[in-house]
Each structure stands twice: as structure tokens, then as C-alpha cells.
Amino acid sequence: MKYGLSLVKGLKFGATNEADAKEFDEWSERVNFFEQAQTVATLVGMNGTFAGTVTGTVEELWLKPILMSKLTIVPDGVKLGESGSTTILEPPVTQFVIDEASNDSRVILKPEMVVYGSALAYLGVQADILNRDTYGIYGISLMDSIELSIRYLLAINKGYAAFVSKYGNGRYVFDFAILKDIVDKGIMTYSDAQRAVDDWMEKHKNLKQNEDIAGIGLDVKAIDANGSLDVMAFKKSLENDIDIGLFQSPLSMGDSKGSTYAAGYVSEEDRMMVLESQQRCVRSILKQFVDKRLVLMGKQPGSVWPMVDELSKPTMKASDITEWVGMGIITEDDARIWAGFPKREP
Image 1 (cartoon, rainbow, N blue to C red):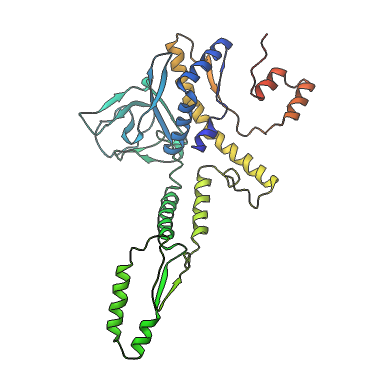
Image 2: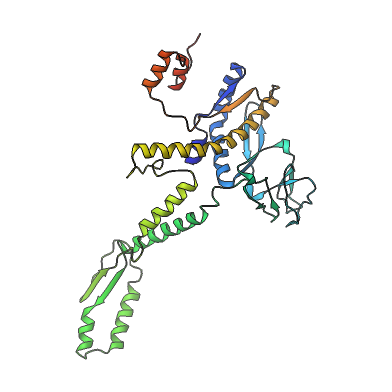
């Protein structure tokens, strides 16, 4: 979610006509366009590809994502419904097909009916859901490089939480010292003593958290929960792998320990430049959606366009902005917009 939010930060509209920009701003509030844009950004990162249909009227227009697990994107000349291929499918695409494998529920959409975009689609050959090799059609998902780390982290979180929930700070060793003395004195055989231990363990095998352990001649010792592996260090390592895969840094995730201002600045600047490549893909998809609304309004496509904050732009302080106004570098209206205020009324 944070990844998607960062890509559409400061979303607004530019236009050749100021009245059109204002109308789009009002429409954006009505249909919660920011949330739709955030969804697009998140899905591009998660799937590498976005495809959606435009629904509603000019006043209430929505961009509805198509479930990628049901979608195939195919060029001309492909026989629908056949798995596998002897050739690699490449653009231009001519059909967006939902449920292609089913003759009964198959839906075919033309390119002009779909808002579509992909990120880094030419980095490698990818198989679609019908196991056909494609190149330049589907983008690269950020999840591909971190899927295993996510699975390991979830397994550790679940297992370790259950472990701590049952044992507190670790597993227990129960030393039945009194039974040892009885066996040593020949009062009880070893096998009888073992059966007594087994019976006791069976009775108390479902020991829950915060339950006391009591017994005569019973010594309870806790085993270190980490064992030979530092679980928390391993967990932290997996979290770092996931953060890096999603273009996040420890500093951006709230961990400033051991980081200097200079190191943090350089790290953030580099991270933002990488994120901007994804941001351009998202902006292109949003522009397609805006153009479709312009057509419905009877206006020229491209006369209104979505704009987002440049992520790598240095952070400005109020004193810097004031100084630039005084030097004539920017206007007072520019300063008001920077501070979140509207322009002055003429």
C-alpha cells in the first residue's frame, strides 16, 4: 500500500484550459480518483501489468481492474483456447481475453475498450496463464524476486508466534528428579517410571499460555527459543530483502538506527529515482483513462493530463520558498500551491 501511495503522491491535473483542470479536480473528488490511481500503482507493482475497463458515465466514470489471473493478452493470429505455443507471442496486441480457456464464459475485449500498461515488459520471456511464451506483453512483477522471502517470513511469523504463545520464552525440559531417586533406590523399575512420565506428559501436552506448572520433585527448565538460530535476526534479514524488492529502505520504513543524515539522503535520492521509472508507467496508464473521459466529453484527448509529484525533487523548506519568491524565481501563487493553498483570486 505504501508503494502505491508513494507513486501517486500529489496527484492533480494539468490542462491547456484552466476550467477543464478545475472540472477534472471536482470529478476526481466525486469518484475518489486518488484511490483508483493508488490501486493502479499497487497492481502495476504486484503484477507488472495493469488492464482495466472504463465503466459509468462522464460524471461518474470508474476504472475497473481486470483480474490478471483470468486475463490473457494476445496478438493477432493466435488460436484462442490452445495451451502452449511453438512461437513467442509479441506486440502489437489485438485482444484482451477473459477466461480464454472456457468456450462458454470467454469474453473478448478490443484494445480500445481497455486501459493497459506494463512495466519492464522487455526484460525477459514470460509465460501467460495458458503456458504460452510472450515477450513485451506482460511486465515484470516486483513480487517475483521476493516471493520466497515473503513465504519464509509468513511461516516464521506464524510458527514463532505459536511457539511463544505456548511456551512463553521457549520450550521446557521437565526433570522428574523424584522419580530418579525412586528408581535409584529400587522402589520402582525404569519402565514403570517412564510410563509415569509419559502419562504426565500426555495429561499436560496441551499446556496453554500463562498456565502454571506444579508438581512434587519436578524441575522445569526453559530452553532458549532461538536455539542455534537467531530467529529475530533471520526475520529482520527477510524483511530487509522484501523492503529492497519494493524499493524501500530501512530509513523509509522507520528504522533510522545507525543511519546518518548524509547516508540517508543519498539512499533516499537513489530510491526515488528508481521509483520514478515505475511512476512514469502509472502516469501513462492514468493518462489513457483521462483521455477516454475527454472523448466522452467531446474534448480533445491530451488536453487534460494527470500530474504527480516528482519523487526525486529535493525537499524544500518554507524559508527556501520565501527566499525564491523574493528573488523572483517563483511567484507568490507558486508558493501558495507549494504550501497547499489555492491561488489568489484575481
